[in-house]
Image (tube, rainbow over all chains, first blue to last red; front, side, top):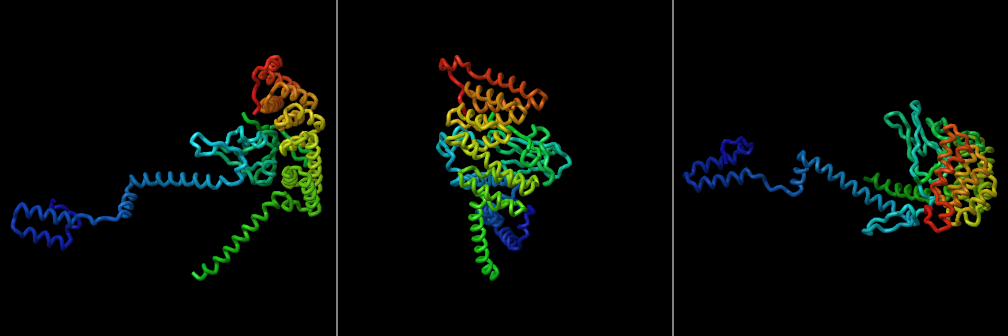
Length: 206
Length: 222
């Protein structure tokens, strides 16, 4: 043990007294070893609790990053597990499912779902830089304004992907919750009932 | 703390009320009645009666609610909404009869849409007869509707579709025909010409009648 070290604990009066008393004692190899043992015990940190050690480890920069990743992973796993438990309610039971090779996760085959009920993700886009908000309305959302909002991309184009059943769907865009417009990129759909032209999309599985 | 002791039962009561409201709102919403935001009370009640009547007949009511909501969104008058919903209810009933014996809700809706663009009723029967009873006719009906809406004569459209169906076309083939014709018409091609060209294109993908007769493998229908 180097006596010249500037460790803060060296200034402890008790330790200094112990050190002085030991130095005053007769010289000898055994005494030197005794001094070393006494000082090493005096400078040794008290035994920390598991919690304290974990906390200290957590605070080190490397472990903080690792810990963040671990916590994020745990949150993801927890999220998937709880979501699975939540979704697996009676509403999903009528859908025919079959087990995976491991038998752990139910897998729904597309062929098990009646073609009338299969939903196909269908993307809609609208290039309108003036609108503050855009939503899409159609029979699929009971023509409720704002029920299916489009997202504005960085390039100013509005887009939404809506799961639709195969077949013909009539729809329209609503700008700023007030102005209904047809999709300029799609064929027009007449409206004998209300006289407001919409657009039509044919949805089918590729 | 005393506040918490007092507030807890109140919160429980509120939660119970909210749950009760949620449970009771479900069937009401499912019926599609009493939730229509039609300002004109007389028209609203008339629309609700139409929907209730359709429900009693076993017809799908969701399209009727959607039709009413469409009118609300398009700011139509209550009377106009009533007429539109009533008209759709009649078409749904007619379509169900034409697509007998056991059409799905989606098939009934597609049939009603076809009738809305003036496709003659017997054509729905012909479409139904062109495919096995277990095979949904939603796509052929929707494509027929779309072709007629693009300006093609119903007879010509039906003939092409039923020919393809008889040759073993899948719903995807039929849908592809509709989408292609749609694009061609949008690009300026005459609707009749687009149909003829595209129908030939689909036909070329199907096995020949001779191959079918010989028992050659056919494309499977999804």
